[in-house]
Image (tube, rainbow, N blue to C red; front, side, top):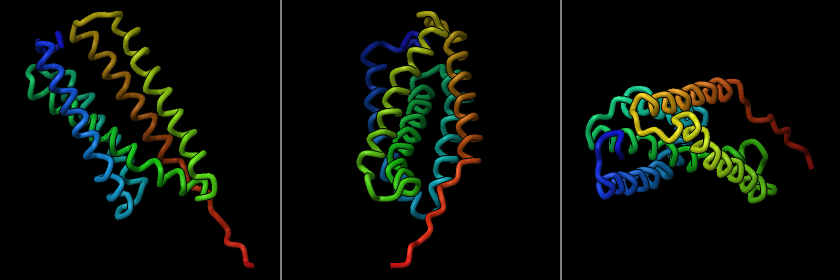
Length: 163
């Protein structure tokens, strides 16, 4: 909140906006993945995060810029969550999809814990915007790595068996 000079109450309202856009991203991207393909939706979600992490959040100087960056992050985060169950079934089939998705989601949760810990170490408790820019750029680099890995990832080919 000190990064863009927001009071705790105003900064808290951005968390509400994050939740709304996270909730909107789930059905929007889940539905879109059925139309344009899961791979394309994941690339778009990564690209939206890159825009927020490189162009908007490091330069946020007002509530509205900060809210826009957080909204984009929330929407794409929800988009990942709305697409992952389908991706899991594409890769592993419907048999044991509940267990398989639970394992994917557990990894997601671990990243949700460790990611902020890495950011905290990177900024050393600082509220200086320059320090937080480093964290934003680090996360943006992780998005680029994710995009490259996703580009080379292919769902396994399933051979139909004749009964």
